[in-house]
Each structure stands twice: as structure tokens, then as C-alpha cells.
Amino acid sequence: MTTILVLAKAPVPGRVKTRLTPPFRPEEAAALAEASLRDTLAAVLAAPARRRVLVLDGAPGVWLPDGIEVVGQVAGGLDERLAAAFAGCTGPAVLLGMDTPQVTPELLEPALAPDAWLGCDAWFGPAVDGGFWALGLAVPDPSLLLGVPMSVPETGAVQRARLTDAGLAVRDLPLLRDVDTAEDAKLVAAEVPESRFAEALGRFRGAGTDGAAAPVRDAARTDGDARARVTRAGVR
Image (cartoon, rainbow, N blue to C red; front, side, top):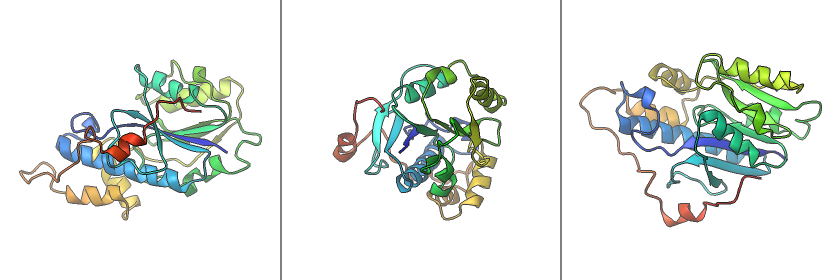
């Protein structure tokens, strides 16, 4: 079976979703990030996988569900952090971010099915902004990511070309929208109105007003159960 990796930042105000501020305040942006991460992890838990691993920048909090292993991110650029996540894997792996709360087990199914890797070396999930929301490799190879320019409009095209130039057979997952801006948040919430993300966004429709922000848990304050779920073992 395939390992699912989720690359994420702990939802701490001022450290996540900074492009949402303004119109949202840092506490609101962090609450939206937490909701998006919760939705993503719920989808991962519902999908068939060998292992489910959160590759985390920061400390886990009460938002971390049972059944998810945690390893820390390495230092460096995004390409280096993605490469390191794959480098620790043995066997097929599919990596997601935390910016697509609309992801479902059904969207991931083609890359996780028993025959997902028959005649296929890589799965690529393109994003509306030109990046990618998912990347799967039958044989994880960090060199396929190192040096790819990240967070620019051509990121996805360069990354996919890197795969095909290496002679890999690539199949595509559906196009999804990352949540980077307030407009993205509105559009994605409309796609999944029953999600935690949509519920959180609904609380902040008055963003930019003087109303009090809804409380958000400080992800740096973890309870004993969350800490007990952290492992320093590499992703395999």
C-alpha cells in the first residue's frame, strides 16, 4: 500500500495563512488554517494507506487526530522540505499540503488504488494557481523535487516536466484550488459547505470589522495525548 504524507505548518497566529491578512486577522487566519488541516487529515484517515504521516513545521496540538504519525520538517526551502519528506519513505508515497480542505478519499482514490502504480511512476495533482496540490511517486526520489522553483505560477509545469523528463509515466489527479487568498477561501468553502473550513469561514464573514475574533487554540500548547503521538522516526 501507499504512504500518505501531509506537509503542514502548525496553525499558530502570525505563522500561517499570512496572505489572508488582511482581510482576516492573524487569529482568524490561523483558525481557518486549523480547520483546513483538520479536514485534510480527516480525508487522509478515511483513505486506504500503508501509513499516514504529518510532516509538520511546529508542534502538534489538540487538532491532531489519532492514527496520524508526526515527523518534523527539515530546514530549508520548500523544495528541500518536500524532497526530505519523500527521502524518508520506502515504497510508494503520495504527498499533500494543508491548503485543499475540499480533498476527499474519492479524489485520492486513483493514486491509492491497488492498481495505482501499474504502468504509472508518478501521480500529479495540478492546482488552479499553477502549482500542485498532490504529488505521488512510486519510487521516492528527492532529486525529482530539488531545485524546482516553488510558489511561482510555473511551479506545477516545471515539476511535471521534471517528472516526464526523467522518463516517468505520469498520471493526473483532478484540478483543485489551493486556499491562498480570501477569494480562494470563499470559492473553496462553497465547494464543501459542510466542511470544518466552511464553518470556520462562516464565523468570519465580518472579517476586517471591530468584532472580536473567534478563539483559536495555540498549536504550541499540546496536551499529553498529542505529544505521545509524535515520533522522531523517519518516514518510511
